[in-house]
Length: 217
Image 1: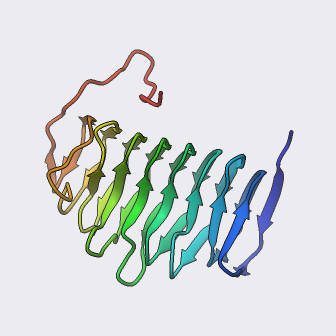
Image 2: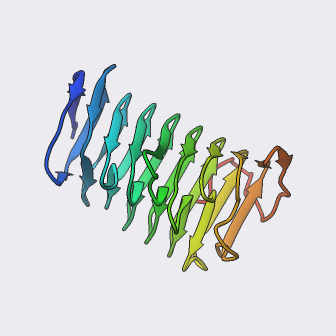
């Protein structure tokens, strides 16, 4: 069935702890609308978020625990954990958005783990800081495509942890600063058409270009 449409009017809209979402909902922001809390998208939820600003000072902006979600033209910042935390079997597409840190910055702009399937396209990722941080982190069995993004002012751009079953596609991005957090790499890594500190990066891996579809199996 059709989901609920929520229009967020200008001003700050606060709540305590987490605001849990368990159904289909489309959230639309307006100029001057700010959500300073954490959204927790539960299993069974789905929907979209557009034209919204989220500023969370003490935790993640959104935790995805399930469902299919799309984010477009949003500005999302936090100072701890991950701006977007994609876990379990969530499927998340983020486009044309700014993801970054405030103050010392979060650990990750996008943290992908478990069996999450995540596409980050045309986004700006910056100011992830702290001891274990990177703009994008991949764990476990996730499938991630990072395409046409700008990554700057991060402690490192990419981090892989327990990642032998991860598929990570890094396509056409502009990256400045340190590239990898350490020597660990995903089991399946495709790099194509990226630049790092102004220089073309060497392409690697095998790309399935029959239909242009990402490897989100």
